[in-house]
Image (cartoon, rainbow, N blue to C red):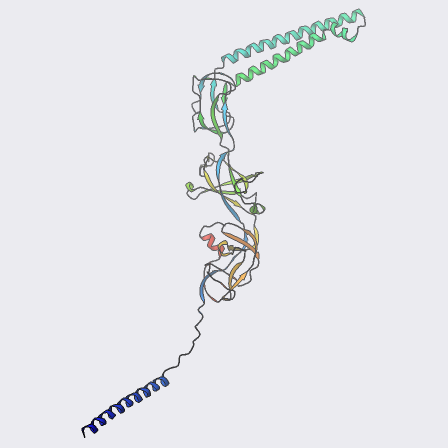
Length: 396
């Protein structure tokens, strides 16, 4: 009886386990059948936001910015042409003084040269008298020759008429006149003056100094004009306008500029970078006649802005937006398009193109890492390239 009861309990446990399994399987089947089925969803294409600007167009002048060091157009070491003692130095003849051409600088003792001039003038009078005597003797000999009514050979006749003596006297007279002119010239050289409008850089003598021929008295520089040598790429030369004024800038001028003119294209290129060289001339660099203009000093380094000839009906493109092969990414109808424009001239920051862009093309302001033709974009606009450069004070 007890054994039958145990078997009954064991069978109940088995059926309980089976029931739990059946119920769990049914629940799992229901979950699997009622769970949502995952589906593949195509992601939305997010157009990139790009900043664009319309290309500037019209008639523009390309410019080239360079730099150069100011040099003297004329600079001399003024030397003595006669020897002697310096008896006077002009009060204005000090370093830094600006003097006009012909202004007195110093005087060398003139007394010796005045005496030499008197001697030469006396010798001239004596030479003139000797010639007059010989000419009188020749006239007397000619009268006697006519009275003698004799015919002589040409050489004998010349001797009779004292022609060799007259020639010698004339030569002596010419030498005497030359000696007088030389004495006068030496006397004038005892007074040293400015050879041009200029400024004294240094002085090497003082009153009482003994100077000899070729002794350096002053270092002078012409202040009428200074020069600046500028290097220019060969590609800019066809566009260069030689008649347009050249603008000079210096950080010490407080935003003011000076105008200059192109003097000449130098015959050789620079040995380092093979660029062409221009000589630019600046009139009145020290502003002696125009005090309101900034002063340009020797050895100043200035920025030089050269003007080009006008480019008609061109489109201005910032150079940073162009690819290395000259192509250009533009946005048209909210899509990226690659153009190959005709580049007329390329400066440091801007390029000017004549054709190759289409109506509606807008230029990229920000460069993209990866761009494909036809890629959709969203636009954020800004001012044109020309307006941006002008408002920022940027020169092409």
